[in-house]
Amino acid sequence: MRLVIQKLVQLVLVLLAVTFLTTFLMSLFRGGDDAILASLLGPNFGNPEAADAMRERLHLNENVVSRWILWMGDALRGDFGLSGSSQQPVGAIISSRVSVSLALVVYAQLIALAIAVPLGVLSAHRQGTLVDRAASTTAFGLLALPSYVVALLLILIFPFGFGIFPAVVDDDVGPFDIYQLFLPALALALGLVAVYVRLLRTDMIATLQEDFIGMAKAKGMPTRHILLRHALRPSSLNLLTTIGLNFGNLIAGTVVVEVLFNINGLGKTLVFAVAQRDLFLIQGITALVAVVFVIVNFLVDFTYSALDPRIRRG
Image (cartoon, rainbow, N blue to C red; front, side, top):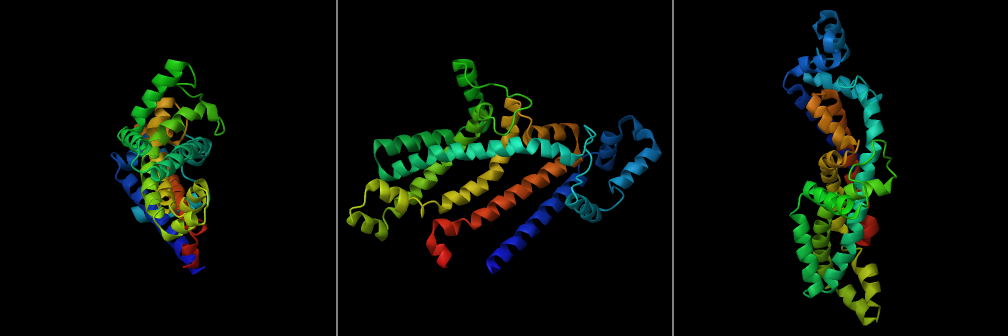
């Protein structure tokens, strides 16, 4: 119980730090408060009364610390400010785009694990053979390719080459439209496959040399049973940590992939917000990404005990 409380306190502190840094960096944005007012007021920017009223509403008269505290109070009530580019509440924009981006990240993780786990286990079991060398070479090749290069290659191969899967996703695509989101998710997943295969292979080789594996072999257990039941679980701790950390990398990767496939998710919205200097929209998306990243890693910490009983007993 004490460990849970400590992790929750750490989670809250990290979120407070991230949101404060976001507010501070937004205050350094070129053009400052005038850029915010100009994007929100448009032609009325020259009206002193309208500018003063908007400045008061957005707490722009306050210093950075006071502005952050007031923004946090508004955010806890669900008010993330007003988008200057669309004149819509930031919370409404984020809620309409977040489901597709999260679905894309989850699909990419599932695809990467579906490919990497069998390859990693097989490479460790067949260490030094042709299968192991082929898997390692493929992993290094995938690791060298950025996600946008993979995305362009997939577009050339599947939509234009074989005529399957769309090159451009529909504007109203939903999070459960797996057919349309498959190629974008695959573009994100292939880079992860290389990392996961190498990581799992290394840990599996070490686990297969443990005494309890030798005991299982001496008892005459089937090789498949030993690999999947006895060796895979204790070899998955580093993999699980990497999965949690890669949620942040995947969210960053969705920026390029969503633009290439024209997906109306958080990544494309963030690019649009930066181009339009929509500071409150940038701040809201950044804060949400930080929250998701911290919560995922928080949950990963408590999944360790389910994989390794030694941690649970400790």
